Image (cartoon, rainbow, N blue to C red; front, side):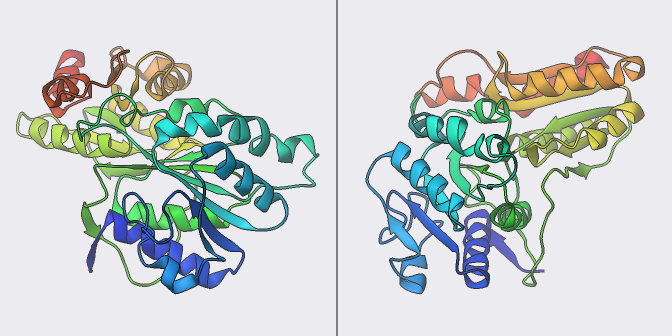
Amino acid sequence: MREITYREALREALIEEMKRDERVFILGEDVAIYGGAYKVTDGLYKMFGEDRVKDTPISEAAIAGLATGAALTGMRPIAEIMYIDFSTQATDQMVNQAAKMRYMFGGKSKVPMVLRTQGGAGRGIAAHHSQSLEAWYVHMPGLYVVMPATPYDAKGLLKSSIRDDNPIVFIEHKMLYGMKGEVPEEEYLIPLGKGEIKREGEDVTIIAYSRMLHVALEAAEALEKEGVSCEVIDPRTLKPLDMDLIADSVRKTNKAVVVSEGYRYCGMAAEIVTRIIEECFDDLDAPVKRITTPDVPIPMSPVLEEEAIPSAKKVIQAVQEIL
């Protein structure tokens, strides 16, 4: 099978869905002529024209508001927010408008929009450009949150998100755009709310998503050499969360470690740990561990940044502790 980058997989998904449905259009800062901050929309302006690939003013609130209104009137907008850190300016539109419309109008309206953004650390670009804020959006009823870790998942999940009738926060990771992986040329979709076992094992379950999946897989490979068999699960969609998959694995291994690049306090890792305890308490042979970013702004110093975010070394240590 051919191999393409995470960035190319996302671009293919956009092109295929725009060709399939003329209601789909893209808007955001520098998405048209420049081709996007991370070049995901490169070439789409020439392909589809300014009516369907729109540069906007530097206003995240305006971008999210325009997308919400367009979705309510029958369009299927894909709004790009350059950094998830900047999405704080769009939270009123996403949290108080897009997320609530379908419920408040008794199901008579729908908001089929995708807010594409990227988060995470790894490039030494400091506290305003390196956060993992997915827990903010997971917290809100009415929003879906999707965080793909591979090119295959990125394409299949983005296509499904564009076709879905709910407002979706689709979070990419800045350190994954150049990553290559197998992606079929024929069309495929990945259903929202379905996780995947990325590595089968018997001794401990490691749950990780986005870039942290690759950290978990690195740790699992190292632990395999020590005779420890790790099952690695990628939820792929944080909301809805495939808790059945996670619970089945924990009931098999009787131990769990959750890895998230988000902050520790009230983060996504805390939610998953709580759900495991609620549903699998009698199956656990050890406390559930979580590996997260501590409650500090992301440092600019590469050395301090690396120390702050989860690493394979920290995952290995956590697994060894509960074993």
